[in-house]
Image 1 (cartoon, one colour):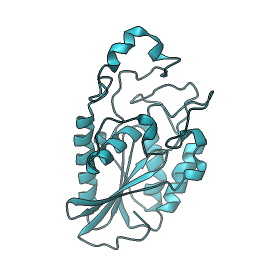
Image 2: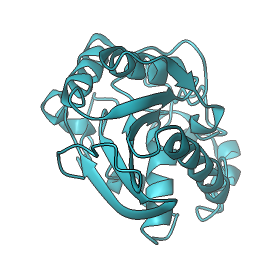
Image 3: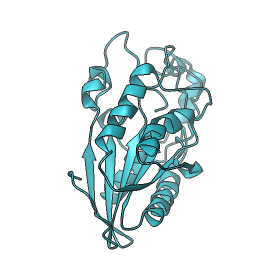
Image 4: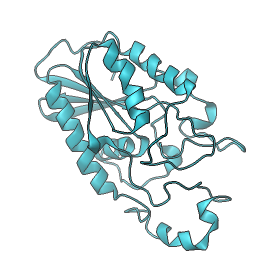
Length: 232
């Protein structure tokens, strides 16, 4: 969605779904829902950048996943608008059988044949939370945020996979996909505009794009020695 202000229009509510900023993860662990993974210094700069970007918006509700990286990303946005930060468990990262492991084709969990059985069905997927379940909980979380901010704007902080899955559902794309092609960069905003209770448009923006390392941008080719944002 482009800039501007919803101006308290009772028929139009805007819900910005933000992916958290960069996480301190030097070992390249797929951290998933594990506790103890916080924003890096760069991640905090990303969060501040988006808070500044949204400072003149008509934001009346800020809610985040319970995981530390999402809470820390949402805090400066809530503070900028003088709001209490809410938490919604439905915004949490997708469950994944490889949580806590390093993950890759040439290293980590995929080197072990015993793990290959988890990869048999990419359509469900067999290694984690079903895509359909992610759609249901995320649509419900977005609807709750919309109701809280009706006629205004809400900011919802979540994680890459659930954000991409709910966007794919709304835009009527298949849910199974190539993870390298997700348009959901660190600290990005996927914006859903509601007219009443119906989503009428979806937008995407990257207010902190200049802070995102090149190898973490959507569609970037892997760089040897550079870890992806696992469990994002």
